[in-house]
Image: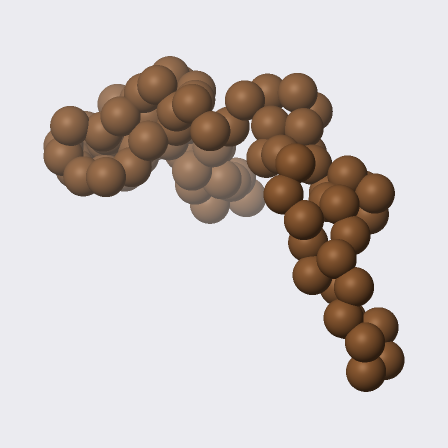
Length: 91
């Protein structure tokens, strides 16, 4: 593991990263290896380890809005946004 420079007063000490509780990115994310992002956007440099996140992201480029309001012409690319919008129709 690489050493980490840690300032202490006027002295500079080298401490192993493991000794100060720092690990690799995958260790800090609950064991999920975040360095291997297998799902890549074909339109830009975005990549993610989760296929569902990529699916939502691609809608930014395509303009797809599959979630439609039953009360008006509003459409959304994400279900959460539609649910929030639906509160505007409640009196």
